[in-house]
Length: 533
Image: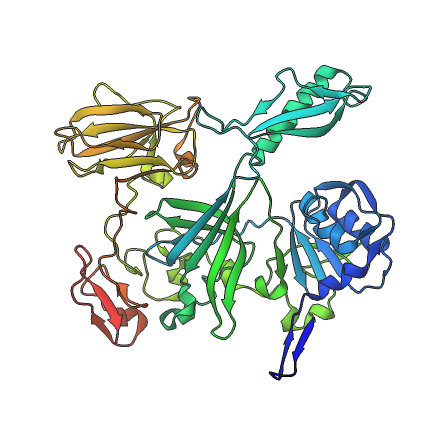
């Protein structure tokens, strides 16, 4: 679309992807019944009014079966309709690379977390509960076609508790008394199973959108050599941690703002949305090489070859070589001796650790709840003497958590809305003082009893079923001083590129070259901060 302004001597143009040339291509007869994604794409390519459209479709999903009727619908509608389109029915992500269109499974590429005080500058969380359904009235059919309900009428989400606001909906399932389900009892069993499957898929969870204002180290002069190693792409899975405001989410990147002139990201949006799945549409330049594996449907003739080695003439050039090694994908997984997922031994003669380089400084984290599974042990704590006891339905914090006497603290649920916390109080000599009992109402406020200086935490599931330290990421609570916004304050503001050395005798110039000066008035406990001069 063009807009010409002769008075101001300007011309504006609005462009869209060449894929939308298919808006004028209609599927005459196109119905699939239990077909694979590849077969469905092939049916579309063979049964459209303009079979010479020039587009090639591909997928990496060989297992999902689709049943749908797209007859007399446009090809774009058949592929992208949010309710009945191929991408929605198959829970697929659409990647468009000029005339190549891929329908790929959800991403499993996990990137290093974006953490407040490191790369996270700000975060906005939008929670939309409009589509939440936590009570399903499943409806099937009798042999005569009449509506058939279960004996209990409705099925509740396992996440419901006494405080849950019920949001019910009638859902008709394709289950009728007949060959597949000989009796009404069989249909009722199937209806219950399908309702529970919908809950498992997240129909009872709100749609959460997180807008992140972040700093990518590769966009700074000091970390240009790491530019590709912290790069994020649409479809990547990313964890955002902001203990200041009790945010800890993991989701898929589905939108970002990019400054084309500066060549930098300015913000990105991630979506946590099981109840209403998002369909991300991605262009080729937004994804790393070798990140898409698929079977290509060429010209409607079937799966001629795969993306990893197809069409040798076209992909013989470096420009189209999808097998080229991408450094950001081959970097080793992060651990204590790796910086942001990069094995320091691979890139420097001096081994780096997360203790030797830090990008910002704060006081004690606001959230005192241990968030890593390694901080927890299997078992319970005796309410009579505070000693460890064996249990499969309890996990306990491995270490003591020191608190300030006289300070009022607030406990809130961050992740699970059904798990419960139990606080055990100890004095400075680890002598048991008492406990809070099981906390069932949140937020919960408490202060240390007389003589106590520290706590240990016990967690259980509401149903008292088995729980393990590995369940902690899905359990997260928040323990912060009451009335304190976030509870974390920045002790000093340092320029981008300032670094912390855990050993005063080690100069940053040894690692990075150049001239560095110590920063004056560092915060307590962080004496060795330097900036490039």
